[in-house]
Length: 94
Image (cartoon, rainbow, N blue to C red; front, side, top):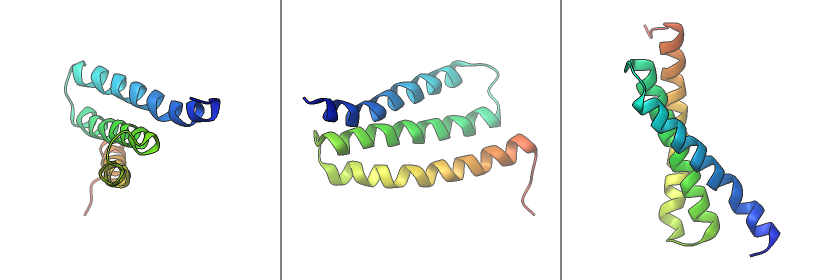
């Protein structure tokens, strides 16, 4: 494995570790609030994106399925951020 390959695969691996750890911290923290549940969904989408980015770049598994996950995860992230901000600031849709 060359240095270029290592630098290409490192960010998705580190991202998956960081987002997975944060997901566990938020999941195990108390009290369970709506804000934490929405943030958990965001972290899960980020974790899935990181794992799918690594799998797509590495070519270990079937690329097309992981690429589909990689394109679906940002949509989930966007929706989760929308509801997170709405809940955080107390905005309601009319």
